[in-house]
Length: 330
Image (cartoon, rainbow, N blue to C red; front, top):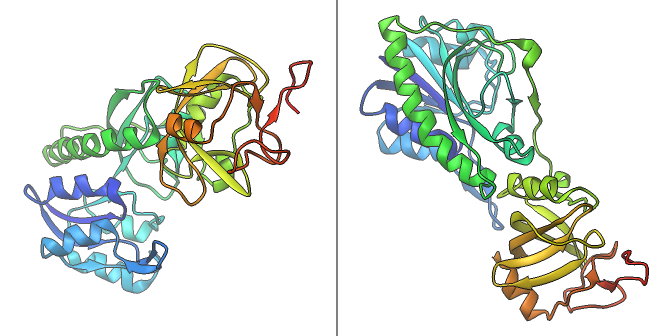
């Protein structure tokens, strides 16, 4: 089949790589290059790198609604479009340019988690499973009929990053099955039940702030769902201490207080119960084991995060503070 592929980040790469040996990918559409890293070096999207290495024409329009973009799609004369995390809403004229429709890989079990952050939200909300949906795009936000779904479990050690790594190849293999069924006419597109739909809003950096008054199970799931971006954090000196690899642990105490630490991680009290954080990242530093961090700074049980956060130099009036006689944090 002649295919136009539209995608941008790493999540889209396995799908493009799966298509190349089996179909005729005649055009790749991706977002424009953008500055990346501390030096703000202009960097190509991962999909562009793969396409250029395969000798496929690449276009990078600023908008999907220009006449030039539609002309490029029409001239490609493709039977089907494939969209994987492209990052732009396609207008009806573009969708109608494909005789067999435009397929999308979405990282959730639709109609649950329509929107920009379905994988992260599933982990953050403590869901037991997630998956991929292959759907036919319409003009709505992930509202098109579904052709095929595949499920995977979410464990209490999974992060959004680990689920991304699982769903990307699963989405690619499921896409190939859906294309085969679409070509043979053996697939039926099933309309979504809009009454069951939920929205997975785009994440912001501020979403990472940990509310220690919440229950341990809730906090642990949020920390894992925010890994790798934007990262869950708690105030630390003049910056933030990022937290990773959280699981529910035994114990309890004043919310935000340190209960203990060992090589398994740093045990912190929550509004109900406690969590064990296996890794942290201090401002300007690399990600490291929570044990090494706590040991190097000589943290002690019975200290609590104050509103100003933990001082990088150790305990101080502006950093961790002892618990008061009533057991509440200062």
